[in-house]
Amino acid sequence: MPDIRDELSGAMSHEDPVRRAQIQMLKPLPKRFYKDVSVAAADGDTHAVLLDGRTVRTPAKQPLAVPTRKLADMLAAEWDAQAEVIDPGKMPITRIVNTALDGVAKDQRSVFDDILRFAGTDMLCYRADSPEGLVARQNEIWNPVIEWAQQALGARFILAEGVIHQEQPEEALSAYAEGLRAFATPLGLTCVHTVTSLTGSALLALAFASGRISAEEAWTAAHVDEDWQIEHWGTDEEAFRRRENRWQEMQAVATVLDALR
Figure 1 (cartoon, rainbow, N blue to C red):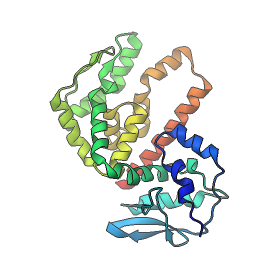
Figure 2 (cartoon, helix red, strand yellow):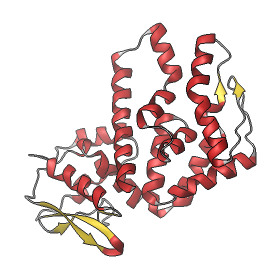
Figure 3 (tube, rainbow, N blue to C red):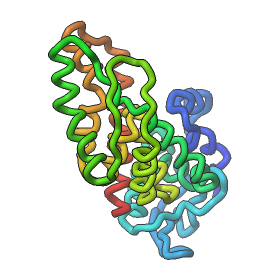
Figure 4 (cartoon, rainbow, N blue to C red):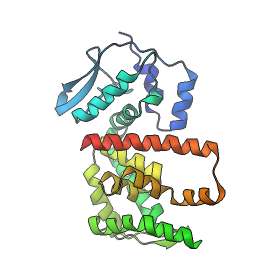
């Protein structure tokens, strides 16, 4: 059976979605070389994806194995959906799992700390002082998440107007870190970190991962300022496409988190 792992390595795992797309355009997509896709029990109570009875490997040559059968079935469905060629751009769940197994698993602490740094300068803590309509919308959509952090996590974040840095209390960050520990696995941290990057808010990411808000609510909250600008000044097609691509990544993360529960 042909080994296409080296061919797919860059395109399947590069952290920058733009660079992934560039890599994919530089070479022809590999042809589908397998007939049957299945799932089987693997080591450590995990579930692996098999192609014609052989375990799929990540770009770093690890078994493509996950902790729940539901997630493994979703991975298998992505591989089975490939027709004439294997297109990494149409396999978002596989990309997330590859990132978790090949990257985050090797240094969970740094990913955890990176999310915590986002919380220290969280978007939800920096409010507009005008116009009145934008101020009201931020309060309406963001305040419930701030209140959730205080009530559910014991994290009291300080709000500020404008962009001048506001140091957050160490107690608030420690309380946030305690909440984040519930997701301190390679896949859990990958999902929270991805949502943090997509939304610009570690608070939104943790509230979403914890089930406090839906993916749609987190996405709306992340784009309060942008949507306000669009309503008043309009948008362009390129910006719209970028946002749609990021929303698809958000949906893939939501699917993975749901499958892990």
